[in-house]
View (cartoon, rainbow, N blue to C red):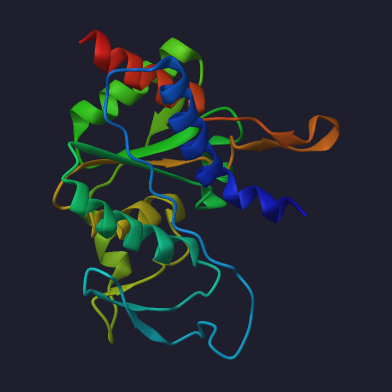
Length: 212
């Protein structure tokens, strides 16, 4: 039943927007939440399908369980209409990030090092910590497809990094960071429930920006 926590990325967007509004912070923040009912039917994705993203790039479906990034990539393209200075996406995107970082740190990847540094600092300031993983071009080739512009998964190696590489293909027009919260969004066992992370990190980042 922990699959319901896959909406924690959306919840953290709502939580951040609510906090900014309640504090009446003088900053323009827009939240974009792509949502879809995830149920099997006759129109469901199948292995081998090729779909066209909002950006026009075609995507080969190699793994139907890598469906969240199909929503996220269109949300990133949709965000272009707001001419944003910075875009931060938040998602419980990969189980691989739990293997890499456990439940202590959120995975961070970015196409701009200054933005990554600001988020790392905000994480340390708020004790809602994040850890940066590489977004090197070396990993991009794992997403090569014989039938489309890009495959939706990159194989067994570096799953969290290749997932971010996939998203990076849709972020050429703005500074962007990706937060993979699959390991930090909720607790299991006797403390079962959502943690609210990374709202403290995001709010600290916003406050730090306002302080200049």
